Image (cartoon, rainbow, N blue to C red; front, side):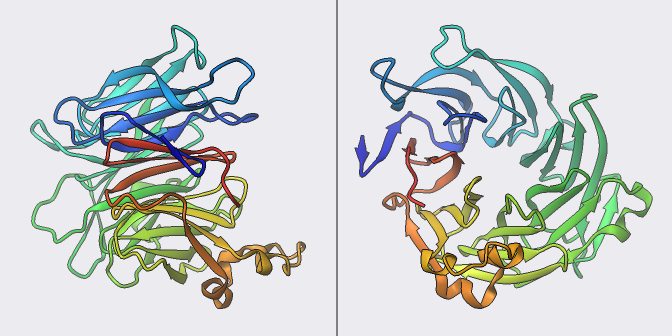
Length: 374
């Protein structure tokens, strides 16, 4: 079905993550979904956009190209490049697959390359969730309910650094090499690479910890920056596409925070008026003055600068041209619009590639817009 350029397709499973298969030159015609809350029948699915004939634009409804069973709810999907994709689950497993073939090939399929079955565990066979997964070149970083941060080199296929993070009642970081009970700690919620050697972890106390992976474990505690604001859980995180020192976080109360990692400071907080928890946050990869969020309340929003403001920007002033940095202007010049009509069920994930957007929700549907209005 479609409405005003928005296409929707019901796929029969709650969608927890959705990602476009990268394509450097053209708009992608394939995407991947991961399901959740389906007992023991959660799957990773590969979809291809279809067309009525060779000369027409590929569009919805998509065609299911391959489906592979997973051992739990899928918690994250990240592409390493246009062939390899990493997947995490709430059973503590992380797997890397290769997509073999192209859209509409009769034999296109997933091929499992490597798996870490017990990457996150409480020990004694008790598995726990891998909460989030980040990629940078051919390195993976994962966090879990066991408070572990794992850094994995895919070149060697080895876990080359394992850190266990908890916080005491004064929110000081404690580095451990064995799981320690009785510590008042806050669950880790999301993660991203700041650089190839720096990993940012967020938790449910609205704290962020920056880990320098070049530092020896024995002295790593002195290389952690601490950020605090009101203790509203950080639920998702995104890095500005061109100015990497700016980090954007989504909160459980629906706010977006803008952080400058050079000064370890919160520049501003933006609100859409929707108090439901943000589930994912992402920039348009080519137009970073456009930010997109989806929420537990079923809204998919586009946050952008008003064109009248951007026309007055000096193109030579790169720092000032970042709309989000101008704290005096951002709230009055900010435009927030619904990309699709609210569906009043959680929209869990979104992704943008070229001028097309896709999102997945708990109503067992994926939504697609081919030409984003920027």
